[in-house]
Image 1 (cartoon, rainbow, N blue to C red):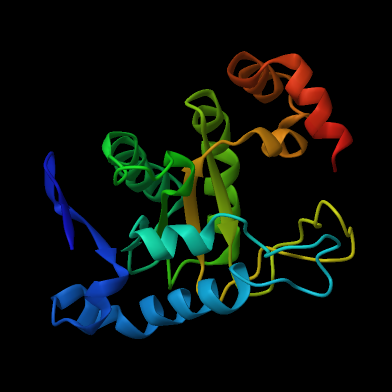
Image 2 (image 1 turned 135 degrees about the horizontal axis):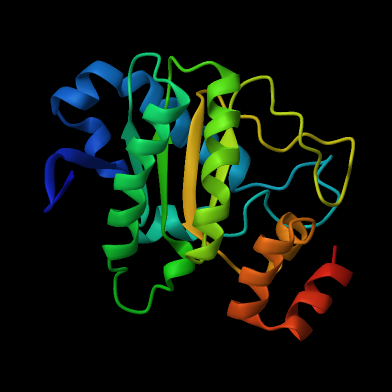
Amino acid sequence: MLTDPTDPDRVLVEVSDLDGDHDLVLRYGDALRHVVTWAREYLCRPHPELGRKGPVCPFAQTALDRGTFFLAVRPGRPTTDEVAELLAGYRSWFQRLVSPPRVSPQFRTILVLLPDAPAEVVDAAQRALKPEYVEAGLMIGEFYPGPPPKPGLWNPDFRPLSSPVPLLAIRHMVVTDFPFLKDDPRQAAAYAERFGSKEAIVAARGR
């Protein structure tokens, strides 16, 4: 269990903590374990409807293996503004976390579980937060049962953002994220500033 040095009430659950007796694990262990199982059995594996080879998420297995897969829980039914405030703290901490030696930051992720939040709040929070995350070189993704209506990049009939518990995921932006950003001029400009326009064109053609 990690505690934010700037806020003792802000904690991150590591996968190894799920067998422990921390109050957060005792209260929300089922949701936390469901998400870890989902990550292992869905994110880390190929899917017949994905439209490309390889696992659904190319980074999840390494994050799990190297101890850079972190979980947090926000119980109750927060408003969009409350979720945004909560995520601001976790974003700041995410940027201060240091990966283990020889583990690229792109394999670090924080999944903030919102087990009681309605889908519309998760969606609205992700939309509101995404521009500032992108400008900071980060991505924030929404996942929940349903699933979210966003189509897959390689198969428009596939809905890849399904998860057993509503959550928002924080990770570093990578070069292959351009298709998620190209339709918004502000976000595309932030991407180009970080990776360069040539890489953006290559990434777009690689969809």
